[in-house]
Amino acid sequence: MPEKALEYAHANRESALDDLKSILRIPSISTLSEHETDMLAAAEWLVDQLNQLGFHGRAIEAGGAPVVYGDWLGAGSKAPVVLVYGHYDVQPADPLELWDSDPFEPEVRGDNLYARGASDMKGQLVAHLNAIRALKETTGLPINIKYLIEGEEEIGSKHLGNFIDANGDLLACDFCLNIDSGIIGPETPSITYALRGLTYFEIRLEGPPGDLHSGTFGGAVVNPANVLASLIGKMHDHRGQVTLPEFYDDVRELSEEERSDFADLPQSDQWWRQQSGASVLGGEQGYTATERATARPTLDVNGLLSGFTGEGGKTVLPSRAMAKISMRLVPDQEPDKVHESLLAFMREQAPPGVSWEVEMLTGSVASVMDRESFEAGAALDALEAVWGVPARFKREGGSVPVVGMIKDMLDVKTLLLGFGLPDDNLHAPNEKFHLPNFHRGIDTYIHFMSSLAP
Image (cartoon, rainbow, N blue to C red; front, side):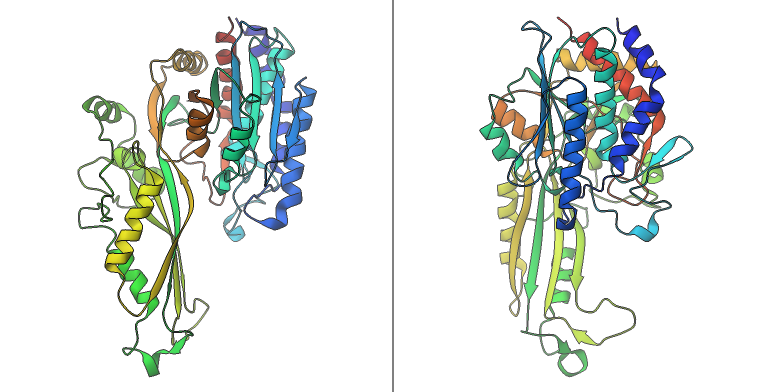
């Protein structure tokens, strides 16, 4: 039983919080080249933590941001080898004026710690590291651990596949524990058993060779901005369904059992309105908000750019227009096939007078875990031991590309176990981590790892 490790963790909560604040102060923004030194600093911070814990930690060149790897294999050959996945990169903090405090100077307000990366996902990383520390300082670590911590998750893990492919022996394990995850609510522990995949595109349209005066040429030439707006409008029908050719051909439909499970979750349509701040919900007809947000495919505009967008007016016909489009995919949908669907749509719908191109920036498949596995049962028991209530299974609408990579390249399953909340403002101003979850997370990891002992 892990009582001594739990006592150690409780006695060292302030130290664990100091660890979290320390790495949150490093602006490890992977998408901005000016933060390259910060990326290296975050990697070295993690290497130092691993070495302090007795791991063989090191930062490994991976073609972009380094991968942090560390292992401790002192539990013996009968104990399982668990590969723990996480990432140390974060999203940009823009727009800065919408933050109530400095995004890279952590601030505790009430039960929450505010900083970029607090929930996504430095808080989860530090929680797991402190669970390791508590076990090693007391009863001992009962399982073998390997860490795989990348620095490019927020930009699509574009070098991670090659790294895993080239380091199969180094990463060999019995299963992967992915700690980049969350729960339904602060008092509702849960395990994510399915993730959606993701494809991300940039669509670029070009008309005349330069911007034109709208008074002189308006009505006489094709306006790329108008065309792009029209194309986007045609990507959904009146029922909220995506109109790309063959888009739904491979979609795995929800079973009646799954729909019944969704209905039992404390995530009503009103819950989704409260979480999002939206006055009205939208999307595909015939499905609940929970089903639409976690288990149905989507197409969304993430950004638009064309013409004059400054203060005041400028009567111009833009020569170019651009949109960034993301699609969340469900099991059996393939990114390349969805790419072809988008290309077919553009060939059918784009009018004469504009040229266009579509670039696929990222692509990852959906994943589903076995809810009856030993590891899933151990995680449910650990959550219940800490929260005092039974844990639930849920789907997650987001995407974690590494889950599919690990299944395909290492042939091992992944368990997702993390403690972020839906209202943690991921990728948005005022990102936070609920501190009771941070400390409960440490306790949960202690229970979970202890239950895996041979």
